[in-house]
Image 1: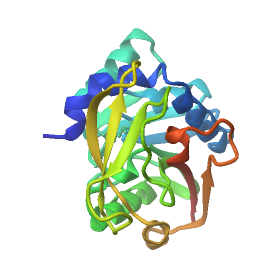
Image 2: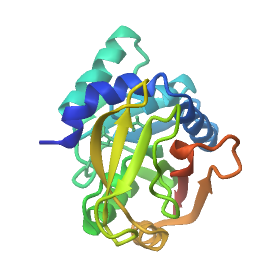
Image 3: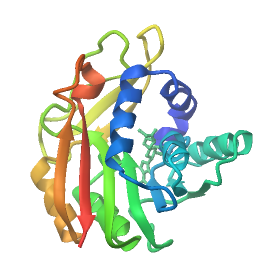
Length: 234
Ligand SMILES: C[S@@+](CC[C@H](N)C(=O)[O-])C[C@H]1O[C@@H](n2cnc3c(N)ncnc32)[C@H](O)[C@@H]1O
């Protein structure tokens, strides 16, 4: 069973109320640049939180996810508040070409590639759907500081399951509730900067940039373990 089938409701409802998480997405959206009228593909869109942010800024958005329940939640939101977002069920490692986009986004999705081979397939599939010069703007786990204990007001905490910093080592991410209790969890996989950059370059990306949140005060665990990853398709 897809791990997000279990946690979809909690994840989607908490997403809208957590402040550190909101700050991450504000910065990510800024890094997406001027997207009014541009075509964006939101990979691993979940319940559509990230897709709606892109649509609010005027992008023409398609979102896909491998979890049926997540896509159902995203479509329900779209019915309640129509923004013209098209959602569909697909796996990033088997996507193929579904369109021609100016921007591909993937917020906390790359860490769900379960092997390095899948990571490379994710990036190749993103590249297939980008116009030449198109951009990938992702948020993901910070390869330098991938784990954190729970801090007040956080949405997540993360701990190693396997050998710390091993290629593809598992990290368990706990999602907390408003009282700080662990509500549910998923497994992420660790990829170093070097592995990620090599996979991006193999897929045809260049101009890779990593932006962390170390200069943002106060930086809590959610932000310290996150990073924005940008790259451009040659
Ligand atoms: C942490 S959630 C992020 C959701 C959304 N992007 C956000 O920022 O709120 C990760 C999402 O990636 C999806 N996902 C995991 N592996 C995937 C894959 N191989 N292809 C497509 N989506 C995937 C999960 O189902 C889940 O909805």
